[in-house]
Length: 240
Image (cartoon, rainbow, N blue to C red; front, side, top):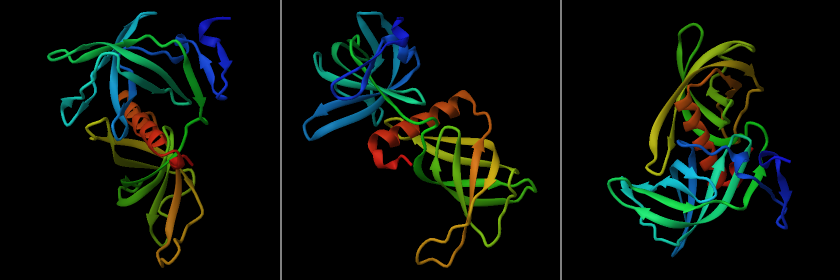
Protein backbone atom coordinates (compact mmCIF):
# COMPACT_ATOMS: atom_id res chain seq x y z
CA UNK A 1 0.00 0.00 0.00
CA UNK A 2 1.39 3.41 -0.93
CA UNK A 3 2.07 6.08 1.69
CA UNK A 4 -0.56 8.42 0.24
CA UNK A 5 -3.31 5.83 0.71
CA UNK A 6 -2.36 4.74 4.23
CA UNK A 7 -4.90 5.61 6.92
CA UNK A 8 -4.57 3.76 10.23
CA UNK A 9 -6.90 4.18 13.22
CA UNK A 10 -5.54 5.52 16.52
CA UNK A 11 -6.76 5.11 20.11
CA UNK A 12 -8.29 8.60 19.97
CA UNK A 13 -10.53 7.53 17.10
CA UNK A 14 -8.71 9.65 14.51
CA UNK A 15 -6.69 8.23 11.63
CA UNK A 16 -3.03 8.57 10.75
CA UNK A 17 -1.91 9.27 7.19
CA UNK A 18 1.45 9.43 5.45
CA UNK A 19 3.19 12.68 4.59
CA UNK A 20 2.30 12.31 0.90
CA UNK A 21 -1.40 12.43 1.77
CA UNK A 22 -1.31 16.06 2.94
CA UNK A 23 0.42 17.30 -0.25
CA UNK A 24 2.36 19.95 1.62
CA UNK A 25 4.28 22.24 -0.72
CA UNK A 26 6.02 25.63 -0.69
CA UNK A 27 3.40 28.34 -0.29
CA UNK A 28 0.95 26.16 1.66
CA UNK A 29 -0.73 28.03 4.52
CA UNK A 30 -0.65 26.27 7.88
CA UNK A 31 -1.60 27.13 11.43
CA UNK A 32 0.91 26.85 14.27
CA UNK A 33 -0.41 26.24 17.78
CA UNK A 34 2.00 27.35 20.51
CA UNK A 35 1.62 26.55 24.21
CA UNK A 36 2.43 29.62 26.25
CA UNK A 37 1.66 30.93 29.71
CA UNK A 38 -2.02 31.72 29.78
CA UNK A 39 -2.96 29.05 27.25
CA UNK A 40 -2.57 28.22 23.57
CA UNK A 41 -1.78 30.74 20.84
CA UNK A 42 -2.62 30.14 17.19
CA UNK A 43 -0.82 31.82 14.30
CA UNK A 44 -0.97 31.31 10.55
CA UNK A 45 2.22 31.05 8.54
CA UNK A 46 3.59 29.75 5.23
CA UNK A 47 5.57 26.66 4.28
CA UNK A 48 8.92 27.50 2.66
CA UNK A 49 9.94 23.92 1.91
CA UNK A 50 11.13 20.67 3.48
CA UNK A 51 13.88 18.06 3.48
CA UNK A 52 12.02 14.79 3.53
CA UNK A 53 12.41 12.76 6.73
CA UNK A 54 14.55 15.52 8.27
CA UNK A 55 12.75 18.83 8.75
CA UNK A 56 10.16 21.33 7.50
CA UNK A 57 11.01 24.96 6.76
CA UNK A 58 8.36 27.47 7.86
CA UNK A 59 8.23 31.25 7.80
CA UNK A 60 8.35 32.62 11.32
CA UNK A 61 4.79 33.65 12.25
CA UNK A 62 4.29 37.36 12.75
CA UNK A 63 2.02 39.50 14.86
CA UNK A 64 1.66 43.24 14.34
CA UNK A 65 4.40 43.01 11.68
CA UNK A 66 6.93 41.53 14.14
CA UNK A 67 8.06 37.87 14.29
CA UNK A 68 6.70 35.80 17.17
CA UNK A 69 9.49 34.72 19.55
CA UNK A 70 10.02 30.96 19.21
CA UNK A 71 12.66 28.93 21.05
CA UNK A 72 14.69 25.90 19.94
CA UNK A 73 13.11 22.64 21.21
CA UNK A 74 9.76 24.37 21.70
CA UNK A 75 6.87 21.95 20.95
CA UNK A 76 4.37 22.94 18.26
CA UNK A 77 1.18 21.63 16.72
CA UNK A 78 0.75 22.23 12.98
CA UNK A 79 -2.65 22.24 11.29
CA UNK A 80 -3.43 22.16 7.58
CA UNK A 81 -6.85 22.37 5.93
CA UNK A 82 -7.23 20.68 2.55
CA UNK A 83 -10.85 21.65 1.90
CA UNK A 84 -12.36 18.35 3.02
CA UNK A 85 -9.84 17.22 5.66
CA UNK A 86 -8.19 18.83 8.66
CA UNK A 87 -4.66 17.49 9.25
CA UNK A 88 -2.67 17.96 12.46
CA UNK A 89 0.74 16.82 13.64
CA UNK A 90 3.12 17.56 16.52
CA UNK A 91 6.71 18.63 16.04
CA UNK A 92 9.49 20.57 17.76
CA UNK A 93 11.63 23.52 16.73
CA UNK A 94 15.10 22.48 15.52
CA UNK A 95 16.56 25.82 14.41
CA UNK A 96 15.54 29.47 14.44
CA UNK A 97 16.80 31.88 11.77
CA UNK A 98 16.21 35.54 12.56
CA UNK A 99 16.12 38.66 10.34
CA UNK A 100 16.49 39.13 7.49
CA UNK A 101 15.27 35.60 6.62
CA UNK A 102 12.91 34.94 9.57
CA UNK A 103 12.16 31.24 9.23
CA UNK A 104 12.35 28.11 11.38
CA UNK A 105 13.19 24.44 10.92
CA UNK A 106 10.82 22.03 12.68
CA UNK A 107 11.05 18.27 13.00
CA UNK A 108 9.60 16.19 10.18
CA UNK A 109 6.14 14.80 11.09
CA UNK A 110 5.95 11.11 11.97
CA UNK A 111 2.30 10.93 13.08
CA UNK A 112 -0.19 12.98 11.07
CA UNK A 113 -3.80 12.80 12.28
CA UNK A 114 -6.68 13.50 9.92
CA UNK A 115 -10.20 14.64 10.75
CA UNK A 116 -12.62 14.44 7.82
CA UNK A 117 -15.12 17.24 7.42
CA UNK A 118 -18.04 17.26 5.05
CA UNK A 119 -17.49 18.45 1.51
CA UNK A 120 -17.42 22.24 1.31
CA UNK A 121 -17.73 22.80 5.08
CA UNK A 122 -20.02 25.72 5.86
CA UNK A 123 -19.43 28.11 8.75
CA UNK A 124 -21.47 30.93 10.24
CA UNK A 125 -20.11 34.18 8.89
CA UNK A 126 -22.44 37.22 9.23
CA UNK A 127 -20.37 39.18 6.71
CA UNK A 128 -21.68 42.37 5.08
CA UNK A 129 -21.97 41.96 1.31
CA UNK A 130 -22.67 44.21 -1.65
CA UNK A 131 -24.65 42.72 -4.53
CA UNK A 132 -25.39 43.77 -8.09
CA UNK A 133 -28.48 42.30 -9.76
CA UNK A 134 -28.89 41.44 -13.42
CA UNK A 135 -30.63 44.80 -14.02
CA UNK A 136 -27.63 46.67 -12.60
CA UNK A 137 -29.31 47.71 -9.34
CA UNK A 138 -27.16 47.60 -6.22
CA UNK A 139 -28.16 46.36 -2.77
CA UNK A 140 -26.60 45.47 0.56
CA UNK A 141 -27.08 42.23 2.44
CA UNK A 142 -25.51 39.73 4.81
CA UNK A 143 -23.77 36.41 4.21
CA UNK A 144 -25.24 34.37 7.06
CA UNK A 145 -22.97 31.40 6.37
CA UNK A 146 -20.17 30.66 3.98
CA UNK A 147 -18.31 27.80 2.33
CA UNK A 148 -15.58 27.61 -0.28
CA UNK A 149 -18.25 27.04 -2.93
CA UNK A 150 -21.16 29.23 -1.87
CA UNK A 151 -23.07 31.09 0.82
CA UNK A 152 -26.48 31.91 2.21
CA UNK A 153 -27.41 35.49 1.40
CA UNK A 154 -29.97 37.46 3.43
CA UNK A 155 -31.41 40.79 2.25
CA UNK A 156 -34.00 42.96 3.99
CA UNK A 157 -36.74 43.37 1.37
CA UNK A 158 -40.48 42.91 1.10
CA UNK A 159 -40.21 40.99 -2.18
CA UNK A 160 -37.61 38.68 -3.75
CA UNK A 161 -34.85 40.55 -5.56
CA UNK A 162 -33.74 37.64 -7.75
CA UNK A 163 -35.43 34.70 -9.39
CA UNK A 164 -34.63 31.05 -8.85
CA UNK A 165 -31.90 30.04 -11.28
CA UNK A 166 -30.91 33.66 -11.90
CA UNK A 167 -27.51 35.24 -11.41
CA UNK A 168 -26.05 38.14 -9.47
CA UNK A 169 -22.63 39.46 -8.53
CA UNK A 170 -21.39 39.92 -4.97
CA UNK A 171 -18.42 41.49 -3.23
CA UNK A 172 -17.43 40.88 0.40
CA UNK A 173 -14.35 41.15 2.59
CA UNK A 174 -12.74 38.54 4.84
CA UNK A 175 -9.91 39.05 7.31
CA UNK A 176 -7.12 36.47 7.09
CA UNK A 177 -3.70 35.91 8.56
CA UNK A 178 -2.28 36.75 11.96
CA UNK A 179 -2.31 40.44 11.04
CA UNK A 180 -6.02 40.21 10.10
CA UNK A 181 -5.39 41.70 6.68
CA UNK A 182 -8.47 42.35 4.56
CA UNK A 183 -9.08 40.49 1.30
CA UNK A 184 -12.02 41.49 -0.91
CA UNK A 185 -13.65 38.67 -2.89
CA UNK A 186 -15.82 39.39 -5.93
CA UNK A 187 -17.65 36.68 -7.86
CA UNK A 188 -20.67 35.95 -10.01
CA UNK A 189 -23.18 33.58 -8.40
CA UNK A 190 -26.00 31.27 -9.39
CA UNK A 191 -29.10 31.91 -7.24
CA UNK A 192 -31.43 29.50 -5.48
CA UNK A 193 -34.37 31.22 -3.79
CA UNK A 194 -35.00 30.08 -0.21
CA UNK A 195 -38.00 30.60 2.05
CA UNK A 196 -38.18 34.18 3.43
CA UNK A 197 -37.33 34.56 7.10
CA UNK A 198 -38.61 36.87 9.83
CA UNK A 199 -36.31 37.09 12.87
CA UNK A 200 -38.01 36.83 16.27
CA UNK A 201 -39.15 40.23 17.51
CA UNK A 202 -38.56 41.90 14.14
CA UNK A 203 -41.08 43.25 11.66
CA UNK A 204 -38.57 43.12 8.80
CA UNK A 205 -38.70 40.24 6.36
CA UNK A 206 -35.45 38.73 5.15
CA UNK A 207 -35.28 37.41 1.62
CA UNK A 208 -32.93 34.41 1.67
CA UNK A 209 -30.94 32.93 -1.20
CA UNK A 210 -28.53 30.06 -1.61
CA UNK A 211 -25.57 31.20 -3.71
CA UNK A 212 -23.19 29.04 -5.71
CA UNK A 213 -19.96 30.88 -6.44
CA UNK A 214 -18.48 31.09 -9.89
CA UNK A 215 -14.80 30.29 -10.47
CA UNK A 216 -12.55 32.09 -7.98
CA UNK A 217 -8.97 33.07 -8.68
CA UNK A 218 -6.22 31.40 -6.64
CA UNK A 219 -5.77 34.33 -4.22
CA UNK A 220 -9.51 34.59 -3.48
CA UNK A 221 -9.84 30.83 -3.03
CA UNK A 222 -6.90 30.74 -0.60
CA UNK A 223 -8.24 33.68 1.41
CA UNK A 224 -11.66 32.03 1.62
CA UNK A 225 -10.23 28.68 2.75
CA UNK A 226 -8.06 30.40 5.36
CA UNK A 227 -11.09 32.27 6.70
CA UNK A 228 -13.14 29.06 6.91
CA UNK A 229 -10.29 27.13 8.55
CA UNK A 230 -9.80 29.85 11.14
CA UNK A 231 -13.51 29.84 11.98
CA UNK A 232 -13.56 26.02 12.26
CA UNK A 233 -10.53 25.92 14.54
CA UNK A 234 -11.42 28.87 16.76
CA UNK A 235 -15.10 27.98 17.15
CA UNK A 236 -16.18 24.43 16.31
CA UNK A 237 -19.81 25.45 16.92
CA UNK A 238 -19.56 27.78 13.91
CA UNK A 239 -19.80 24.80 11.53
CA UNK A 240 -23.35 24.46 10.21
